[in-house]
Image (cartoon, rainbow, N blue to C red; front, side):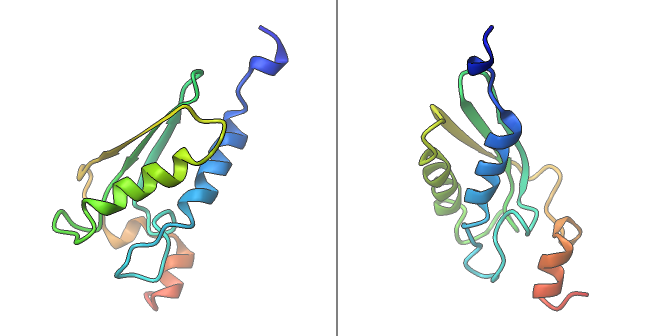
Length: 109
């Protein structure tokens, strides 16, 4: 395998995170990444991405639109072939999952 065919997952991961940081929960002025809604991002050698995420609650008003927005925006990265977003509530989201930055922004620190 030549160097060119090796995926730089670190770099790709950072690009995906940059995209995720442009997506906001409509009720909270913090992006979904800092909120801790993104549990995991998997990239395989075929440039397929699977994003495991949660919502602040199962009754979240954007339960339909937010995963679609995540999928669309991440798909806009040229390197990627396919993006799948899976929603899970295990473990359920809590404020503990938020970054220090998000807690500060929301006055929780």
